[in-house]
Image (tube, rainbow, N blue to C red; front, side, top):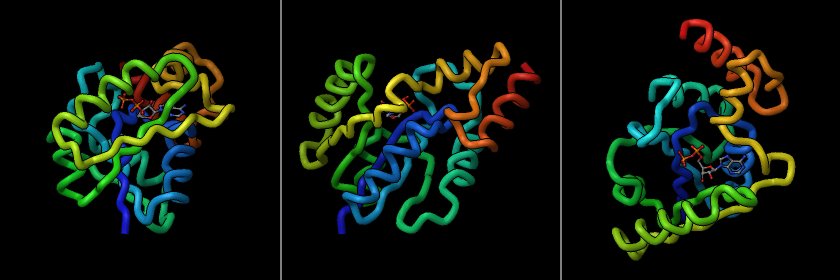
Amino acid sequence: MTIALYPGSFDPVTYGHLDIATRALTVFDEVVMGVFDTPSKNLLFTTEERVSLIQEAIGDIPNLRVESYTKMTVAFARHINAKVIVRGLRMSPDFEREFEMALMNKKQDPEIEVLCMMSSVQYQFLSSSLMKEAAKYGGYIEDLVPEHVATALRRKLATK
Ligand code: ADP
């Protein structure tokens, strides 16, 4: 049984993330979306909120679950018995950073492979950060995130 870890900040989860997670499920027996507690970027949502937005989005899809983690990604992968780390790759912004991170992860634990899945064409230009920016100015985000995420985002931005 091959377990894959799909780690990220997911601040908040978008259809681009969900697309990678569900496609990874067609390749691996189990996929765990790992919400990194303290990424080095400014977050809008707390860890609990990011987890719960994913939980509501994935519902009870078999073999897909979400967990938060605080350690190094490879340490969390070992902890849940994942042999593979899955990441999503959009056309231009991700390649160098993902390459760097993959090499760093490989250095920490050579037994864990990093696999990048190409983003689906309709999500190539979708990022949580740009989507938050659009939402901040009242932009249209309905095709980019599930409805409960759009609602949570608007509520959160209204309190800022
Ligand atoms: P990070 O983990 O770098 O903080 P995110 O949480 O936004 O970034 O994304 C988690 C993973 O999902 C990363 O591998 C990122 O490249 C990928 N990803 C983000 N948005 C998309 C998208 N629209 N399509 C495919 N993959 C994506």
